[in-house]
Image 1: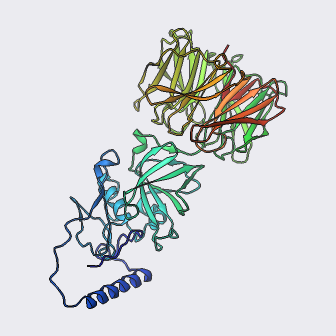
Image 2 (image 1 turned 135 degrees about the vertical axis):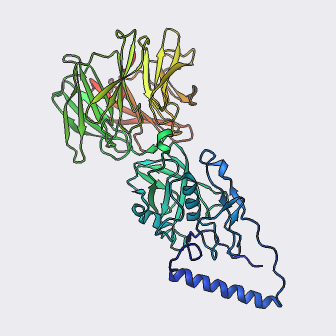
Image 3 (image 1 turned 120 degrees about the horizontal axis):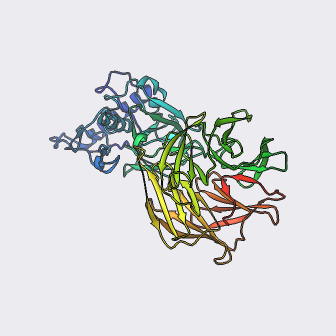
Length: 537
């Protein structure tokens, strides 16, 4: 028997499965194969008795090994001669008797039916690329590549009909897991293992040179409710280019806030606003969920919190959003309820024995929600997603016992805290960022008295931290901050020295090697800058 391999095309729903006309290309190729098989049979001589039917397609990846054990079998589609429509205990949904049942779209249909998101064969879909074209007709939503804001497990990644090797059919893969900016997928009729991965960076998915149309999401897929979605952009990105920028405030320059807009290798100063008095506290975050960095600005003099927000045209506006707010002993920025809008955490040592409150963003103002009480003033504290669940957590360091604590919230809003690291020396500066691109926030820990000024990475394991050297020989900064300044998905460190008015960048290359150098000269000392902090006294 001669097998004709079909390992790249996705022709899901040809006759026998749904009434539709075959395109000329498919008819021609099918007729050609019949002629080839007929010729080979004639050359082989007299007919012989047929052998037993193929019992089952080969399982490349068991359903229990992906999507939290609730996936479906990924099946081999070797040869059009495979006539048995079963794959272990599962029957095909769609596919083609002529080109093999186990096409890429067949997997998506079988998987979506098992999840209860769709009833069976996708209406109006003959080829993989048509899932994207017909998303609205399927009751689904789509995001075009280059404008993707969020991806969750169970979403479909769709390739264009121009994908090489697809013979005009395109391709579809299902998102199984997310690790930082790496999107791990399951696919059928494409790889020998049933698995593959994409990179998500700057609103764009990439996989080699594959032409990707975008992502399709079913509204009945609630993976984002309990698991971390991957989102594009950074909350300190003022111009929506997926590179972190720095807000730089100077009181003596007419109270001007400038944006140091990242070019990837340096910064370009640009005016944001003027006439602002020195804040008691200020922080940068995406408070209205538009993916663009905003600035929260608090004055103790009138106990008012202001928001400074930019729009698509580059214009900035500001105004008070909360009155009667007591001065914090510490405050930070993070998304504590996983709604895509940054919130504030507000700590008051004189309230309830040390009260930590969440100021939850409504998009235009903030509402109050208690996180914890009974916490002593921290030597240092920071906000980040330390366990990778999509909700911001709080790290809390006490010099008195050299202990680091973590306060984490679950999906119901219940907070729990406890010690996670002991015998940790006091830092002279510390900052939060994801330095190894694993989707969990880490901490940069600077000690001026150790090895001539050492920056150590406290790398999150999800429940604690492990130490990894970043750099040494760095003098105390006047100000320092963290952000993804080159848009590679890894956090970098900005380091400003007033002594020479220079701003330096420390960047990781993904292999654990860090490089550093000056990127901006003649920069006057700020009275405040974000996201970052001044040294700890």
